[in-house]
Amino acid sequence: IGSPPPLSPPSPAQFARLFETKTLRLLYAFNSERPLNSAAISPLPHCPYLIAGGGQDAMSVTTTAAQQGKFETLFFDHAFGEELGCIGGHFGPVNTLAFAPHGRSYASGGEDGYIR
Image (cartoon, rainbow, N blue to C red; front, side, top):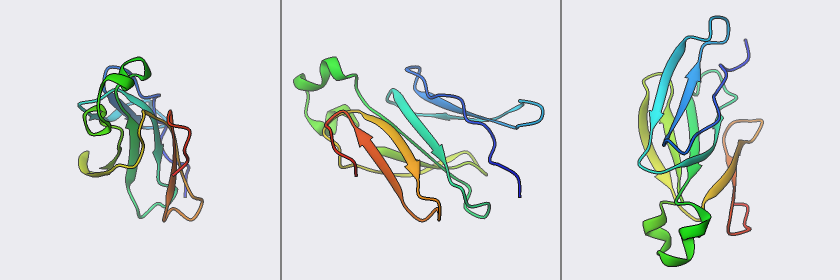
């Protein structure tokens, strides 16, 4: 079992890119309607999931409600490139994401100072 393909750092351009490791061929560009600050790939070979998170920039957070800032973690199927859903919980942009080694859970860290 090889390592997961490299994932480019998410960008304010609202997408994350997944590349094939040997040729650096672009496999998928995961699009979002929000800026993305972090992304992670599931460590399980039979679970082709990618998570990405971000939200409205911190400078504008005090002027909007949490729902409008889009401070959720997005789930994508990187075998098909489709968004599967999202999970909220932060009151500021999501800045970091990581899967647990067993691949059945993840943690997110946000601008609000919480780890969820």
